[in-house]
Length: 164
Image (cartoon, rainbow, N blue to C red; front, top):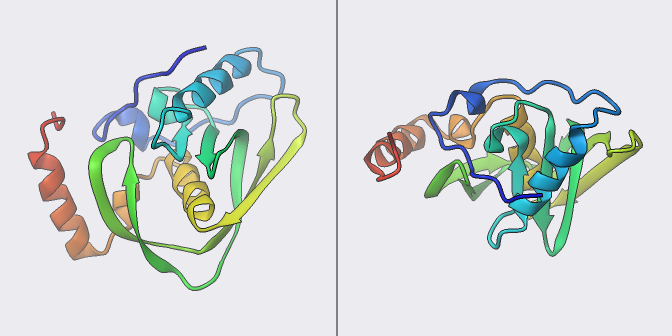
């Protein structure tokens, strides 16, 4: 389908909880095709539907050369001791900030045929699963920063050339 433009921090669609995708929705195939095309751009690990302006619960991922998607994902498990990782976001371009993330995560959902999907992993995959499900719940990664780091991050963001 198409590589879609990424919505930037400040766009209200990023702060809204996404709606469930009805099983069998004929528009879902187009959304998934756009999510896949958009995440295949080099340097991208995940794209949530609201990042391309669609308030529906789906995301694509591109981790270690594996590209895929999940519809109606639910973060069902995280484990391990949370670790500080440098995290960035396509909706907050050009910045990486230290964020606590669990080293393992598991998400369940469905595919376009309504069949169950389970995604799990550690490292970058765990980070992507947590990050993208946060997006679908209307949360940006900067919300999870320590207070001082968040204050510094917001100052830098407001000074960026893309901030409106």
